[in-house]
Amino acid sequence: MKQVYILAIVGLAFIAVSIPQQGSAQCLCSGGIAATPITQSVTIAPTQTSVLTFTFQQFDPTIGTLSCVTMRDTISGVSTTYVLNTDPVDTIPYLFQLTVNNKISGPGIIVNQIFNKTYGYDTLNPAGQPGDTITYGPDNIFNHATGSGSTGGNPAYIGMGTVDFTYKINGGLVALDGGLNYKDSISTIIGGTINLTYYWCPSSPLGSLINSFTAIKKDKYILLQWLATNDQNNANYEIEYSKDGNEYLPVGNVPAGTNAAGTITQYQYQYNPDPSDVGKLYFRIKRTDANGNTVYSTIKEVDLSAQNRIGIQTYPNPVVNSVLVQFDENQNGNFMLELVNITGQILEQKKIILSGTNLTRFDLNSNPAKGIYFLRAKNMDNNEQWLSKIMVK
Image (cartoon, rainbow, N blue to C red; front, top):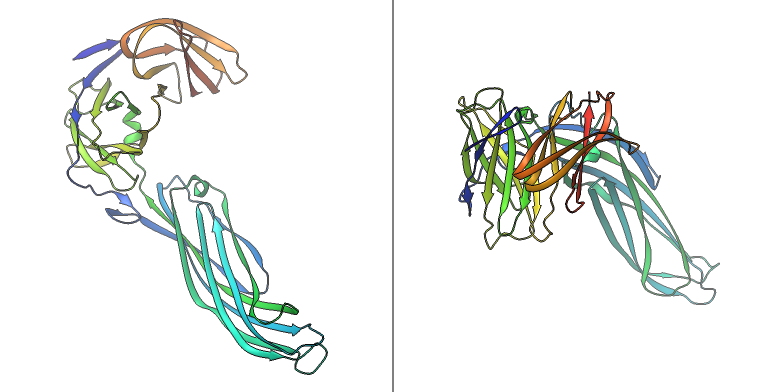
């Protein structure tokens, strides 16, 4: 079926599917196609400082897509513990426990390493008499102890700046047996190496070929929609889904349309959830051309427990002279499209009538200056509104 929307020829592909049957390789930290690691190291020279802050360079997004981040540390430490019995009368047998906790934390990553050691029983004389004190150690509380933690492609690690990590050491001495009247002091020297590794994958060029990818929960199914520009009729689109955002399964294929080069092709795909599908699901589009080159779309999340929400997508973005406006589902009625600047001023308006379609076009006849604007769509029948940020260049 073909429909004409102003100057855009739109081909519609629609397929229903249910349960996936097999897995698919992908670029991740583990499993599938191995991601490329980049490791930075920070060395902590021996110190008695209890709190340290150190920085790593963020991942440069121009070289690829960050898949996940792993932090690994190797820490050594030596503690010396001094105890004084402050009871003025009694000779007391004490049993002590020393607890020391190393904690390294950054965005999405926390690593704790805990050391415990018991001292005693040791008898301490009354305060002021010989034998009223004892020294334990120095003891190797951590000897190249290894800890690790990881997070996904956390945006805090992406950019051209730095990301902060904090190292803290704390703890104390507790009398498991004996009196309450004692004083203690603990001296700890720590040192070691902390490594931060970025696992990244090559940037997907699919972003220039597929746009306005949406995944919307309908009554009993999930509707996937996307627009393809300059499509190739020998390409194939494979829909993949995941329950955890990491391991993806194919659920079906949509062959490319046969429209002429330079047109925009709209695709739809219906996924019927299985009874085992609960909570959040993740979807992406895998595109393979005639030469076997494979790229992926962005990932869309659908929460099966959430209420249905309708939105709009705009393409292209940045905008030059005109923009395509795509609702997440077909609309019927009278609508107003508005170009709004960041101060809320309406610069341009256009009235349209939609009848069983979700796609229309808005021309920028006011020649707005370069910058950030909003495209607002209003349903004039019930006053429902949608908003999308656009960049005019």
